[in-house]
Length: 320
Image (cartoon, rainbow, N blue to C red; front, side, top):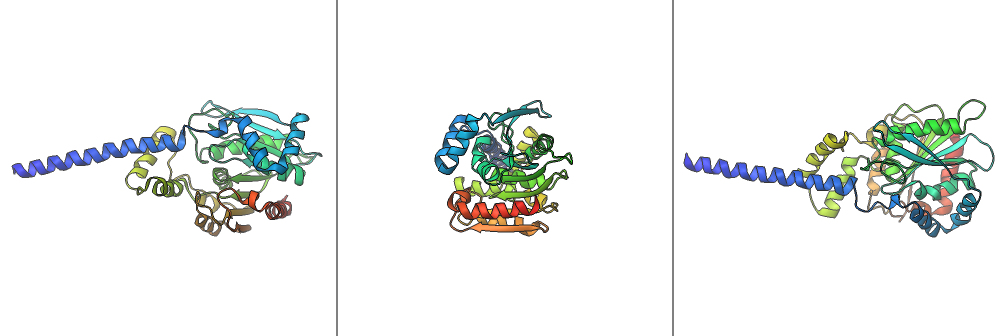
């Protein structure tokens, strides 16, 4: 009897130790992922310089917009009281055609200027580029991985609609996101979107936050999903109001009836290329899938500039 008590006591201590260790590890994981020490998107000027250096062909266009003071700022107050920021640029000639561009993880509106070039300079469209929660000039303490962000983007779509409406009283909008912005775009697509939204373009988005974090946990830390990811998801729900499992672009695209173009790099090891196939399969028609061979994460436009421009242009013009 005495030995049994000792055994159960030791077992209880061990289980308690594992539980405490898991909670501490989960808290670290949440802070590491959602409140990163380095958030390059907070540096607007730095990100602008990076984009002009990386995508050299956009530099004259960006400089001309700055000279003409064509960048305009607007803000909204989110339900939690944080003030969110966006940038918009009118087309060279009056049009209702508008691109709402959604940036990636630890990025900002300036990080989407390469796509801005495609839509504004090449296609002659208006641009509307929000800073997501806790990114760029938007307030907030934690990155939301696209899930609560989808509701903010829907509000931004309403503002873009009013800014660039034609005689019908509405704009004609494409929503285009990259990486976490692509996941956000897919999350938006599963909601009841206004008639002004005509199509979506997602470039290298993940199937769900759970899947992405599970992959990163194994790739960066060589750890299994259990138990840490489960406790981290529960802590995220408790602290921020959403869980990793409910943040599922895969489930959202299954509800989307509007056209969507799926783009992924064939050598993506950050959001692995394999994720695009179940996303594409889940989405009802109309839809299109393009995988750019040998391109790493979010590099398809840089590696295949002409082909990317042609494919996106043809898709968007078909529906706008």
